[in-house]
Length: 327
Ligand SMILES: NC(=O)c1ccc[n+]([C@@H]2O[C@H](COP(=O)([O-])OP(=O)(O)OC[C@H]3O[C@@H](n4cnc5c(N)ncnc54)[C@H](O)[C@@H]3O)[C@@H](O)[C@H]2O)c1
Image 1: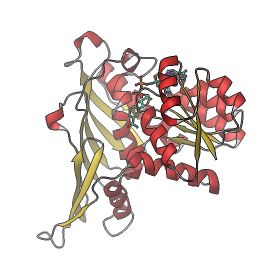
Image 2: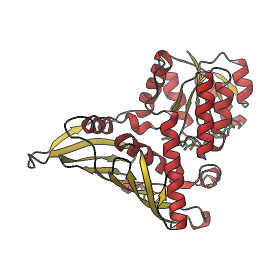
Image 3: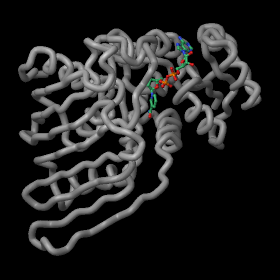
């Protein structure tokens, strides 16, 4: 299958690398609106370079694309691809608004193309194992604390723009919103406190928030998120509990590697499993190819991407009005 990547400067490189290394696909072209970036990638990977997505889609016989641009244009690019029968792997956040997400789902459904969102956490082994445990002997999670402090500060204007990246809560915490949804189901109510402490020149955009989620199942979760950390404190963790036991998943930021758990009927025994150096970009692309080949629904579907965006919008709204927000 012939594939292309759109939007190259940042995470686009990870997609270009993984597509180029994948034996089931042929990377034939790349596209970025900045000509120099396009030229650099095209010559480095020996593929054709375009500065117009429309021109590329009309010229190349593509099966699939990765969209790695800022979220404001995710809908327009998805529509352009879907209307030509081209499958879409779109980076998170799925879009800047829930209504854009819905349009992306609708156009992909009506044209019969696969739509997968870049929620790579759904492929990380200790989190997949935890999900498996929740469906087995361990049982559903009732209590979750997730610390997800981004160890850096974005200086990209689009990242902070309300109608594009939406700041760290939409851009980063969307990963947290998505993985909690994956592990614990749909969310009913959100209560958030947020502030602008580390990037004051970006006000009124908030740069951090702590939010509580009440799930439809009755479970509760709390998330600490935002651009609050630094390189020497590069971590994330998940602590979960239910009537049967407790578990934690720990590791570097977006690189969780270790799962530990205990059952309440044997409190002295702590099991530990380690999954070092996993490449979640490679895994999500392999899964996307499989979904195209089999017609199955992606693990990180458009519906899941839209729910994560809805939670982040609710977090920002709740922080603004100082009240819980029911989804
Ligand atoms: N999954 C992850 O771990 C991860 C990591 C970083 C970023 N992202 C997501 O990827 C997206 C891009 O983020 P980034 O940090 O790579 O951004 P970036 O600004 O570093 O790069 C985006 C590129 O897209 C290009 N571009 C913009 N509009 C375009 C258009 N209409 N057509 C073609 N090219 C266009 C820009 O010129 C730029 O080169 C965002 O949605 C972001 O949230 C995901």
